[in-house]
Image (tube, rainbow, N blue to C red; front, side, top):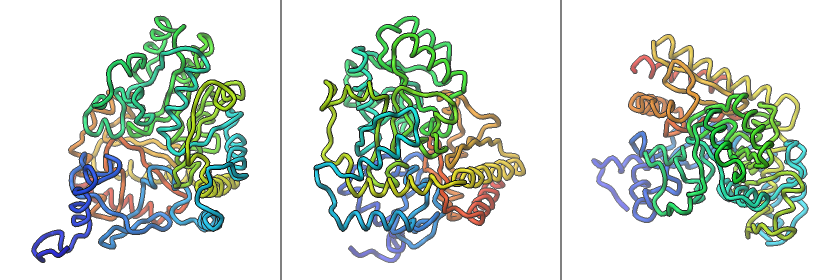
Length: 435
């Protein structure tokens, strides 16, 4: 393909690649939020990444705060992870038969997440979330599930009801192609509303199979479940015989070794994990007590299977990642870096007179152009999207890459240096002054 030198695509390979991609891929991307539709402009096509940075098709370097949407907690190209993956690849890409490494990864997950006694490995967070719901229904013999507006648990039909993340970005409360009868047993409540939760159990407690929560929501930016809300969910599930499911695809082993359930001090019945446990490879999991997990085939009547589940290269990547983040002091240092970033952004916004608030836990963070942190999806939806878009592009122009949607959390890795954070804060200060 050739271009006239007067055409922007003649010098901007991102534009050329996006034009080319849209001919063969819907929207030019393989996951909607990557299309920059919420913020406008052209997506950056990544050529390579190392440490806390990636380089786009034009060779421009960016400080990376999405980290593949969470998995790259060590940064890109960590030596121990590369070594483990390269060795695994030499032994074979996929077998369709069990390997010892699957056992090692399961044992490591169980060691780090005490509420899990047995675990099933799968290939994606969506697969883990839908399987956890099926398991909860099978184990309890009940139909109803409870989820919360703004929490995203993957794109399984029964869960695409007023979800956050990409759906919120495009303003759709649900998805086309999902018949109403598929979601008739899905109850959607307001996040952090104890009153609504109590009402749901008062009306339907005997038919609720599970309550699924993001204990730290990362798909309406960064919103914590309050301790009182999480504790009440635990109490009501126990009283009524429902299962409490924590979706920790994003927060699991990202906010701390104990995950968000460790931060809250609450043990769920089922935990859904992803992202960090795969270290950047397609790998996720769901786990629970032995009694619940033994309801799964081949031991029990709840069917779940996957050709690439426990893939030997993915498990090598995940296991190496978990061993690195288990080193003493890892999360203390990561948490310090993340707080430094959020504190620096907050101070820069204050100096410019821009309403701003932020929060973080471990290597996960979020911020809002509000004076106070929101507690639920409705509050998040009042964010000034025009001002956020200006901030996003201002940072992008200065070599800082944050999520291209105001409904997404951000991620700091162990590879981010104090200099990276200082550069980010300085870039943000420039943009804040122009807001």
